[in-house]
Length: 495
Image (cartoon, rainbow, N blue to C red; front, side, top):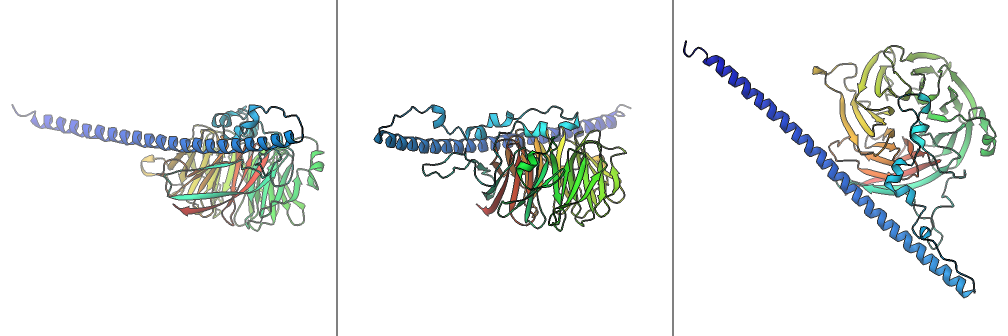
């Protein structure tokens, strides 16, 4: 009897010991998490310091060239007996570059969203575009207001910052600047890489991707011959999304007039005008087999359209669907799945044939503005107004994980403002994002432990609303609230 309570005492001690081990493991996990976050912040500070150093060097170089040019002109005027007027300090400090490179101004220059997660009509121009600079429309090329050196050659108005921890170096070259009269809401390459299309007010614009030449203006009311003719059309109706058929014969445009138009590129005629949504069209995508087009709208629905008949074959979102506008849709490379991002902060994945809801990815703390499948279809990327990108695992789509864990493989954090667009490179080498902070960032989806983005491109003077990658090479395009679309080429080498 005296020792009858010993086994119970031992059991209690064992339980307390196991609890201590459990607590110790938790504390270690928390410590490791804090260390990872600290390392990420250190890497971010390093990138910021490099960016500031590069900007300072650029500023000093431009200032020196301007001062040299002023001295030369002053000497010429004095030799001719002319009167020299004093030059203001603002002229000597590269003012044309300051709005783009000033980080604090870049992050907050745009108009704040009028209804994030509320009135779907605010997507995406209210939150994304901000107040674009007023620039005249023209052909691909440089702007007359860009700074020039003492020989009249234009200076670069874009900048690249490399992550020193990245094992490779990516070289970027600007190929073309495509000027518009309004905010560029979207950009997309044809599957053969021959064309690039943009969406802006009243029209989808088709360009030659190699030369940057404008080929056609597909307005909401028909094909027009010039920008002047487009300007004469009454009312505003932005083309929010464009895509091409797999054979690159057709261009699809979704607009604020609630219709999806399918254009025959060579014949320059309208093939179908798809009607059925009750609010603005925010996103369109073409299936890889060329059979159907998928659309997402502010009416909280996604639809599948038969491109041969022009009929709607299925509507997604009637049951357990989005509680707010569908901002982005994408069809998986094998055509099995349809993904949709919504203003309700959720990413949904449906089975294309059955219409069954397979996945409901929750994790973003604000509206999801963009989704993109990886080339092998096993991953889905999403970009959100919470300033992050998330990578979702689709390898077990429709099957819950044991223990009910999350299928979010990783969260990429680096942008300082809304993430408005995400896209995978076809070679699965990069995940590229565009943001309201005016930057384009390259992420390595195969090396998710890397701290921060591999590369940051500052190439626009307003929000980067859309990013697209060419299927035919290492070329990508960006569309912005500064009324420009730009085509870039890149190459990667080991350090």
